[in-house]
Image (cartoon, rainbow, N blue to C red; front, side, top):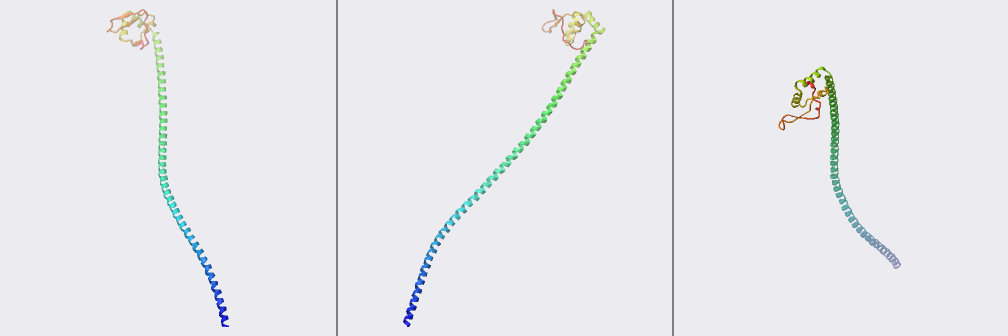
Length: 216
């Protein structure tokens, strides 16, 4: 009985050992699999670390590049602002110059108008003076004093008096003698350093109008 019982116990123990051995084999297989997975995970971790370092490098490069671009953009922005200020200053200067030119043009137009008005006034005054002179001369021709003066000139002086008048006062007008129908010889006054005396002409004396004959 004891032997049988021991055999049964031994058989049970052997089964237990086999079962434990199978479990060990299974656990070993799991361990190997876990080890393999762990190794793969280590490799993956190393790859991730490498990728992380690469990403960090790229990030640092991007940050440095961004800082460089920021500095460059700030410099360009400052230059653009300065250029804009210069353009605005030039625009204001051009506006001031244009305003000054317009004011100068208006002033020149006013001065031109004043000059034109003055010239027109002077012309009108000259015309009025000439008309008044002609009027006075016409009125004097009709007076007895004029006729008497013309007669006296021919009576007391004649040709010598006319010659002297022309020599001493060439600007005077003696055309009134013609208007009085008095025959007056024509003379050409020759400078004393070239010729002494006067030269007879065949044509009547024609003298431009000058001061009024009353000045005689």
